Image 1 (cartoon, rainbow, N blue to C red):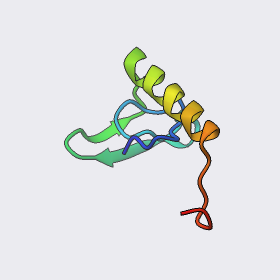
Image 2: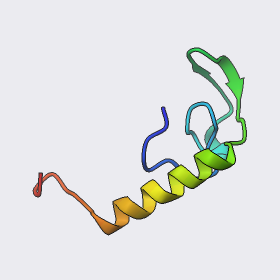
Image 3: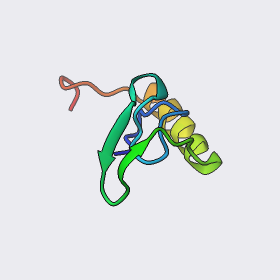
Image 4: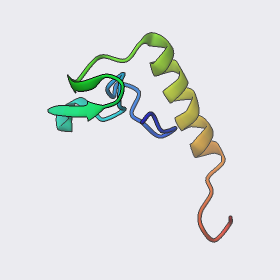
Length: 62
């Protein structure tokens, strides 16, 4: 899934936070438990979240 607003520490496979993850299905991984994100994923997510805060867009502005 990996959206720009994923929490930096969300699952490395699907982007769902640990506290609500349980067990999920995500192709091609299949059923999986929460997996720690890589350092690259964490950095990319933090950068994307910072950029989204700096350049907020709403439906009215689109």
